[in-house]
Amino acid sequence: MRKIKNGIIAFITCACMMPATCQFSFAKETTGKVVATQSQSKIFRSAKVKIRKGVKVTGADTRVYNYIKNKTKKLNEGNASSTTITIPLNVLGLNKPFTKTQFKKLKAGYNKKTRDLKISKKNFFKIFETKGINDSNIFLMFYLNDPLEFSWIKYFGDDVSYYVGQSKNYKLKVKKKKNGYLLYNKKNALPLTIEPAAAYGNNGKLSSSGRKRIRSAIAYANSIIQQNAGYDDLTKLRNYKKAICDLTSYDDYYESEYKAGYYDDASMISVFDQNAYTGTICQGYSRAFKYLCDHTTFQSPNIKCYIVIGMMKGSEENSSWGGHMWNMVHMSDEKNYVCDITNSDTGYDDVSIFMNGATLTDTTGMSYMTNFRNTTETYSLYYRYFNIKPYYADPSVLLPTTEDYVITTDSEPTAENPEQINEMNNDNFIFDF
Image (tube, rainbow, N blue to C red; front, side, top):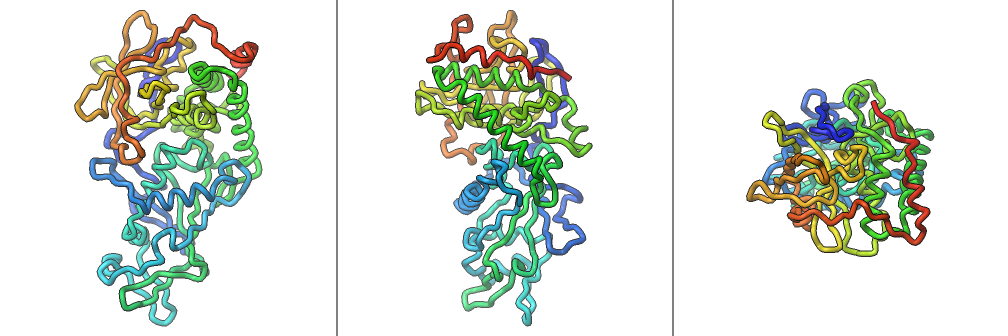
């Protein structure tokens, strides 16, 4: 992708989103197949899902997503340690038998004496697919909708490492019934363990230091919201952008840091941790902005911030597409505006892609062009979504308006307490690589 630094166009290597092939991988990849460690009690997931026209989000996907979301509040706020989420079999749709045809397609069998399910690790996740559950869809919903959820997760770009436990009490068994085959176990549940990044813990546990870091970052983010409580809506949004850009800088060493074992720069935590040695990438900028917006009481109930993903390139002839994440803001005027916080981190508050209108460049409504604000010469950036419409309750939020939102850059923000503006001008955390 392209990143603007101090008003100058610069090329940087960015692994923050999917490559141009538009494949979305949500698991630790080794051989490209389902793999397991030496322990036979864990079945790791390694799945590739291509984001294309045929993608669908089922009601079963949403049911599992909501269950996980409801169970992870303490975990994602740093108040619990185990990263294992136990999901009841009925939530997974396993309270209803598989038909004989479905069971045959699983290429599964069972031990007639112990009734233990016999299925290859390669086919294990087909159990859930048969019930209309796509685990990659579930993680993608978290990826787009929840900036805090799983901020501690171990992933690189779009790889997530997770596994389903198959210990004694959770091992699936088979009961043959007249209408098919019913899967069950002693706990009537399956444990899903999501691996944390090294900065937060390991082996399915958040460390005390990792939990403390999450709690501290959330508290600091909430303090920014509180500092801006008296401002009008537009000033809140502008101050949020400024606060994020003051607190962090783009991390050019993203890939090498991950390989060294201490990467977590795609998280909003790396923005709000008050650590001058942690930078972020486009995911961190976008998630931080959405978190602040999501936890703000705006004067207008219409205002809502969305995370969007796709590709971006500059207007130069030799410019190429690169993966990117940015935001779309639905404003009180019922129009949608482009906000690219990553490329608003220029050092100048009035030079940015923030609350921008855009011109569509194709008939699908998935590609558009917009310009930097208040530059002496026009510089354009092109954006193109992946096929993410199915992941939004109202896909119209992806369609930007054509005109920029009116921002008077030389006017003072209005607030109940004008002194609050000084609190947002703290440059102590600005740093560069």
